[in-house]
Length: 347
Image 1: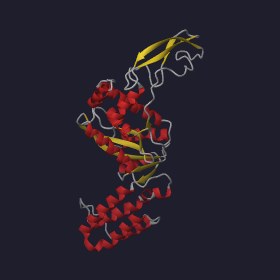
Image 2: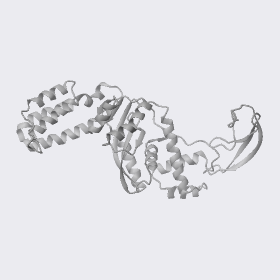
Image 3: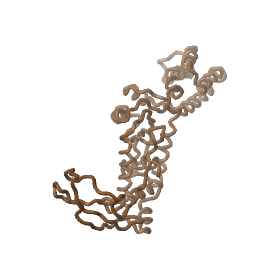
Image 4: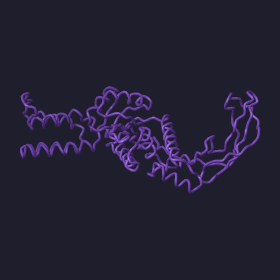
């Protein structure tokens, strides 16, 4: 999927074409019914000519505007520029001041409306596309000073967000309710996630293939191996070295090799203990790795599946950076707009 691009429209001073049909009845029989001028808020064009047309069928009149101009006071170009300036980190007060200097003064509330308008246009572009592989990740954002869990769905091939919801990544039901229509709409077949158990349940419920992020895997395994080395000492070092080598190389038979290593450990569950012995925990750790082996190496056998979920985390990073510059968000709509605008490209 190509990256979504924000293109500032060109603004013409007068129409260069004629309408194809009447907006009221759809008739193609139209004739000109006069001209008028319209003041426009734009950094270059201040006034445009509009042409009035009359429909021969319903006798109603309507205005035909030049390219880049609508019934709104602002030009479409100014709307895009206001949204882009906000996405780049400027406050609504700064945007208001800058546009005033160029003779295109707009209020702070207008800037926020422009931001939402362009974000909705980007979302509309997405509805016509297919996303076979979807990256999922959750984070916390502040809305009116309160932290809320959100989940982001992103196309890892282009880095373009596909959806966002105010849903905790630990809430299986809420996650399913939001993700199921998204999967159907975009034709998703594979999800790329970290190793949170919630995502395993979601993938199984929606009949999706799942790939685990290689970065998260190596980081988690590295930390656990260090902990086991400090708890169990030199007696398990050869075993842990072999586990580390299998994780680094990701061989096709790695799952079977891990299973054999886990079964060799002579440790049993003790129901009388709240915390099991380190040796038993090591055994369970290795057995869980073997069970998830196909997910760890899916990117090696499935075209288009990335080895990591870094693109999704980069999008979250951009969102959090924008949150700091605006000192938090006031509404979820602001969070959504920030995500789509900061990940789009200006062209």
